[in-house]
Length: 411
Image (cartoon, rainbow, N blue to C red; front, side, top):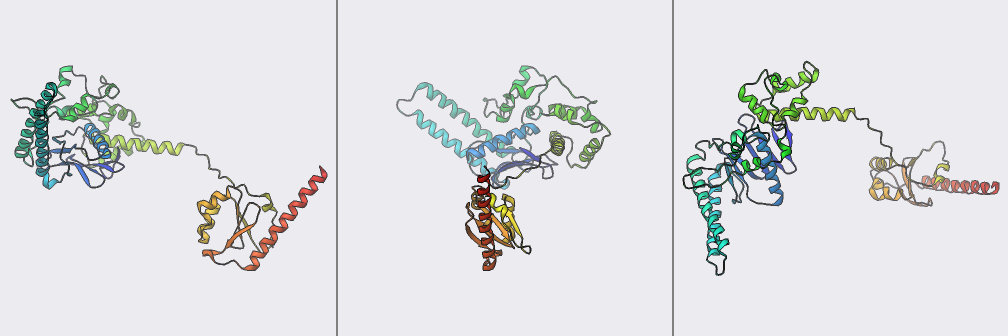
């Protein structure tokens, strides 16, 4: 997804994720009206992961990748509620989730009682019902204790939700997969975003041993980073690329980047690093485009009859051959009629030709038979001009025939 720096939002197609520059609170909307990510009054991030359409499912996946890159954990994920998230009615969305889960439990219970059901399948159904009951308890607990009351901290998520990890032990990495709530009566819902981070490809986890310290160019650009800020820097997914993108110190590009950071209204965070990375990438892309040597586009000429070049007109008259698509379109625009349309261009590519004679448009077939003529805004062409050009075309044909006959005799 593309980051629009001035709007503080990531966007692609009909999907966008807005980030509050002060609180880093995300809001995601699909198709300009279906809100599936929002925050409550205390900053809990609510993610609606239910299926609405194949396109919205792709939007949800894109947003999860953005949240993971920015280290923003999901505090509550709803998998069945259908209505979009309204900040003023988040409790209703949780109630819809509970209703949908209870309906699923009833359907599973009926399936267990069905005659001929397999024992192994029924065991899985009982396990699903048991997990759903825990999930319902969690949803009720979140609604009563956390929603609009206090911030729920996802275990380990705030520390490990980034695309680039340090070299920790396998046991520490296992902690990435943590339940939404830890209860004495067992595990419940697994935070999907943590699971997503755990399952990243090896290519996304390269350069683990490369640590950027206080002497890095990024740290010096920010006038020195503290320990916690350095940890965030090394957790940034593109930290190595960003380090290599920093211009030479005291250069014009370096001063421009320093000015961008100082005037930006975002404190140091993974989001501010992503904004800096986007700004540098945009500058490099623009410079690369300007440096490219673009060959001038040569427009093709219509294959009209060479007899047209032999047409002789009076000195007080002008004759313009409209032998390219741009000339034909310009003629249609200036004259206010349809000569520049796609059908006329297609015909001219097959040998038809249009001429502007004394300010009027004349359209000829491949054998130079007059098809139509009109003036500005399809006004009528004077008969004397029409007769003059038709006579000039006939004279050109006679001259061309005599030239051909002379060439045959010499041959």
